[in-house]
Image (tube, rainbow, N blue to C red; front, side, top):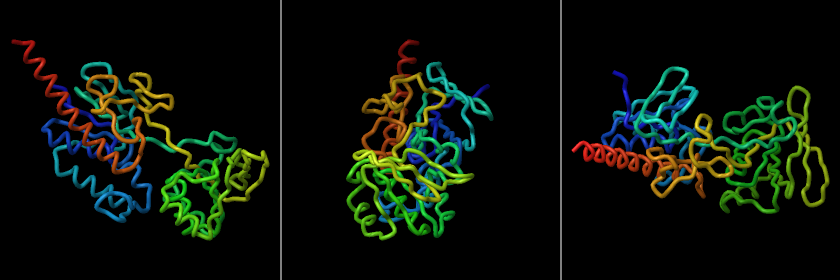
Length: 315
């Protein structure tokens, strides 16, 4: 007899792991499926300073603690599973991966988001050859070199600060004349003599010969074009939701983020979304964990309600 889970959770980052814990506490059968190992975005950050209870903790260590917590419950984990298709409309819902097929009465989408691309000439060509979206992963390759960071939010500035551990010079290119990052993060950056800010500007093109050599920068106010000699470009201009496989099946905003109600239910009954993949004013580890808790509890209540309705209909 084929197995049908009460809930399948797509994504094993903070939101997905938290959802798994709350589903298990609700005594429903559930599984977490991830295209990689569990941990999600925090594994890409050297240090996290805004997760309650940990004034400072390395990203991989926090992720490890999350998974250890999940392992205390009877939650099945399927990692390194490349998802081919997801049918959220059918009952039960069907998730197909390269390794097999999973069915569930409800689904929690916690697939997160990936860094948005600049969509400029040279970006794709030099990805992996000077263009990187992970300073923690690739920062050590830029020892005593020059790098360009694009963006003005927390991620851009924090990663720029991190890169000064290796690089001789870090340019932060921001399209406005003021940063959006938290004040405490801004202060650290302004005090760092390795960082130079290029305001009101965007990277228009990335040039090189086999590897990145130049960032072509345009000043949006004056129209002036400058050429910055650099060994690497790190774009941090926002995020794009990971919705491959179920785009178009449920309601999303103009950027592709999933819209939800106060219980984190999507436009499809029994399908919930948590963390960075949904429309939210703040994308942080702590909000993702909270989302996972809400989605997990909502899934449990949804399943209880459906079972009650079935029992009533059979009377």
